[in-house]
Image 1 (cartoon, rainbow, N blue to C red):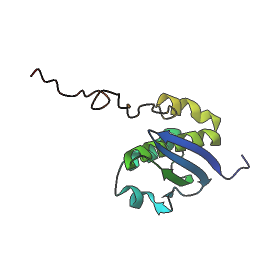
Image 2 (image 1 turned 180 degrees about the horizontal axis):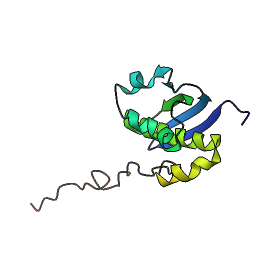
Image 3 (image 1 turned 90 degrees about the horizontal axis):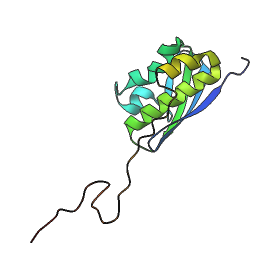
Image 4 (image 1 turned 60 degrees about the vertical axis):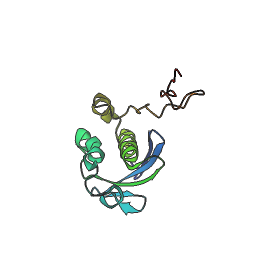
Amino acid sequence: MAQDRYYATGKRKTAIARVWLTPGSGKVIVNKMNADEYFGGNFKTHRIDKPFKITETAEQFDILATCTGGGKSAQVEALSHGISRALLEVNGENRIPLKKSGLLTRDPRCKERKKYGQKGARAKFQFSKR
């Protein structure tokens, strides 16, 4: 593996995370900020570390990521998805443990659209008999 940067895209709802992995000490930079600073304290940082723990590559790569769209929670999920896909680029043998833990599957759930003649996606206008 002569390549020194690995790229992948992770998605969740409307959030998109572009992730670059480089060999390093385990620093996580998101939108030019430290991950704890960007996401606020211990906001699901275990979710970011999970792909590394499963593939036993903890603190071997530095992460540079740009996250757009969605909220912070969806961005963390998108970042985790992107890291998992980038680790797959690093080593193809990582596929089995990542797949078993469900990290390679994009979560398809998103907001249901509002329907015409209704108040919302499923909420109806209140019925009045008189």
